[in-house]
Length: 135
Image (cartoon, rainbow, N blue to C red; front, side, top):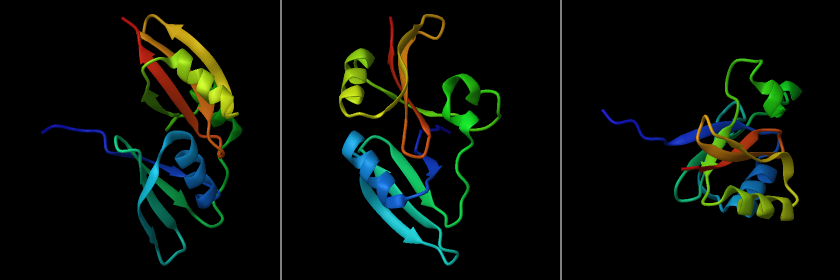
């Protein structure tokens, strides 16, 4: 059996704001939408390569501040971030900065992991990593 990445699910405070943010900044488009009897809204968005399942649950709690920082999020078990590979993380970082996105960590190199990476936050504080493998 072969496992292939399919999607990641995120819970957000404002579905329309998040759909606009991911669409404007990263080219994600809505693929499907449903609303359950309990009011939970679910939208799948895709950029043609990856999908995000975006949830809006009325009355949901905000993400704990500890989980919105790269340095502290590892102190709590569970989901920490999701990552996208880009051709040149330094050039991509410049694009992220020019868009005025919430910058967390400018590009750094981790030779042990073989990557150059940076982090931003989405409007709900969810961490996104962008990386380029180094040879």
